[in-house]
Image (cartoon, rainbow, N blue to C red; front, top):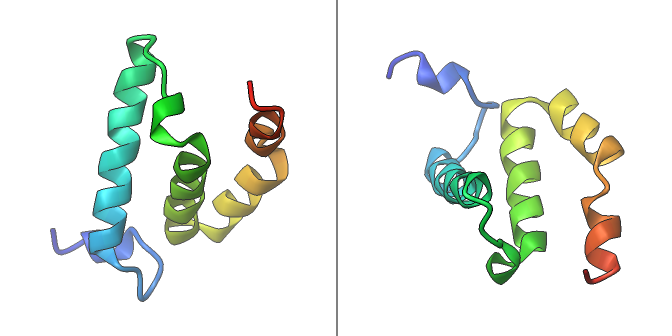
Length: 78
């Protein structure tokens, strides 16, 4: 684990990141089994993805924010 501190931006709260990554892994598994995730509040999931991306790489976060259509889809309340 000594190199793990280099994986995140300086000052990142690794505890919060751990929980966000755990939640995202659970959602990924549900999606992989074609299960619905709408009961998991998709907007919170989107925020978790952006939170993790920001702590891994600011350019990654910018890329996700500039290309993602999730907000548009959620705004239509499918």
